[in-house]
Amino acid sequence: MIMILIIGALIGIITIYRQKDIPYGMVIIWAYGGILLKHLSETGFSREYPLVIATVGFCIVVILGALLKVFNRLRQVT
Image (cartoon, rainbow, N blue to C red; front, side):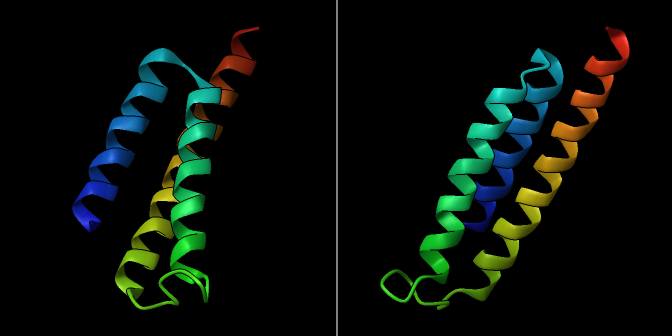
């Protein structure tokens, strides 16, 4: 699961940079947020996998950083 999360984040970041596609990145954040909520929820996995929670949180932060970087580049161009 952890490898899938990391590989998915890497593919997303590469696509965000190449396509300069902010909405695409926001969809990835939304999906990873859903995974995080499911793992934190009492009706979900109830914090049973702390390494997955940490990985998802880290991926969200890194993807947000990529989005901000692309957003700033696009703003400077115009």
